[in-house]
Amino acid sequence: MPAPITEEQNRLDREALLDAAQTLFYAHGIQAVGMDRVREASGLPLKRIYRLFATKEELVVAMLRRRDRHWRASLAARVEQVADPRQRVLAVFDWLADWFAEPGFRGCAWINAHGELGSSSAPVLAEVRAHKRAFHDQLAAWVGATGVPVAEAVYLLAEGAMVTAGLTGDPAAAGQARAAVERLLAGAAGPAGGPRRG
Image (cartoon, rainbow, N blue to C red):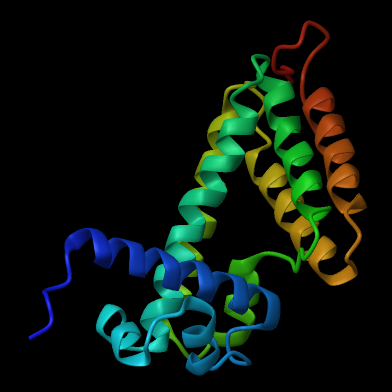
């Protein structure tokens, strides 16, 4: 009788599986990648994979959820190194520019997942919406600290930059959005840097 699988082995297998799924789904698309390719890339037998995640949909949701944690933590680590509130907001777009310039960048994983499965998978759609809500709230907190009420516009510029860079493959969208945000922050403030009274 085989030895029972330990919690640590479960954790390691789950991480290996999520690593493989994230790499393949992001590079090639979710629907284009079959579970046999995930099996080959992860080194885990299909039986083991389906014990960890009963369906491909469950695997996709878990992959998106883990990617969300890593993505937003990486963004926060960069932005929160900056002391000045306005420069913090601009640092979001510097981080986006670096991400857009990475080899293998294929746009926003959540927008891609929504495009492939959003109309047919309620769990995937819910995960995409949860990520976008969390990013919105994270960004709104940084914009709120400036005292300038432009959070929605900044969020739309960030999302637009992601879509544009994903479609064109050109990281310049981040710099263009950053310049627009800089103008927004300056234009909505009075001469002393406080909110304009009108």
